[in-house]
Image (cartoon, rainbow, N blue to C red; front, top):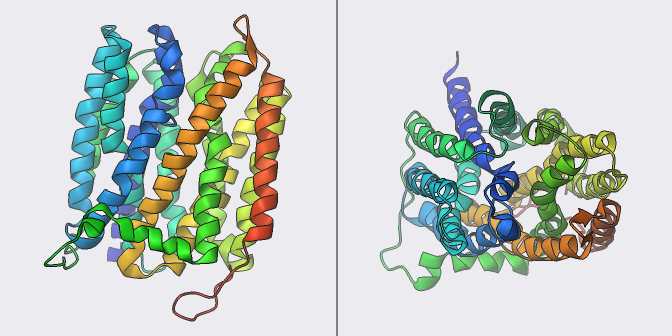
Length: 406
């Protein structure tokens, strides 16, 4: 096996384990909270929640600045994984022993500060090691989707833990295994750091200057806007599945990852044949269609909508990461990926979690949710985002003067 293939296998393993650690607990976390009497805090804790969003506003730019300016990406990632594993175990211990809800929320917030930047940093680390990201990133990134699928199968068929704290303890172990994978990677020397670093350097605030470019601004803001209605997917789809009588939420939620693998394996061909703008718009369009299927309020259409999740995620968010690789100078790419994470998981999820939670309460009467009304409203929001993006994104030349099919 050629050395580059060996290295790509290691990068795929990193993606697999990072996604696996995230999926083990986040996919069915709302059911765990409900089972242990914490239903009222579902909109505020979890992978697409207020606590995660606040963490995504605070930590990614700082972490991206560390990786761009001072420490190697793999070293920073090890710190994040260690903190994530420790606080993951502690949070699920608190849930298991029925600690006060405020302590659970507090631990979830601390966990989020460690966990939220991890996947974005992994992405930046992987892209930096690929010789041709446009062609190679999709297949390598597909390993993360496989990690997510395997986690869903493990939760439902092995751990039998759709509503058990065992998923949290398994995730804590998985975070430690991510650290082990980083030690298999060929070391890359950290970039030269500035002798005198300003607070703007330390906090990664230079990343905000990227918004001066009109297309950059549309992509970053579009990612935030699109993520707002998508915040409902992981929070409320398991509850909808439960209401329709589905026994294995984790297994059903994994259906969406099948199409994500197909999309990622096809991404290189799509990037070669089509403008980035069309891929962005197709992704948003599938977002509208997915919630239209959800609004039909049957188990078959709900599963069909879940199946679409993978393709819409790939077409918009993976294309956005490739966009940053092509259009952002190398010295700023970790911070650019961090800013994308901040806009998506920070502002997008924060406003989305609060808004989708409010909308869910508005659509719920006497413990019964009008799921048709709930998902129809969110589909309408995404349709407006589609129109705004289609009008606002124009397409530009690459920063080095080479024409980009954008």
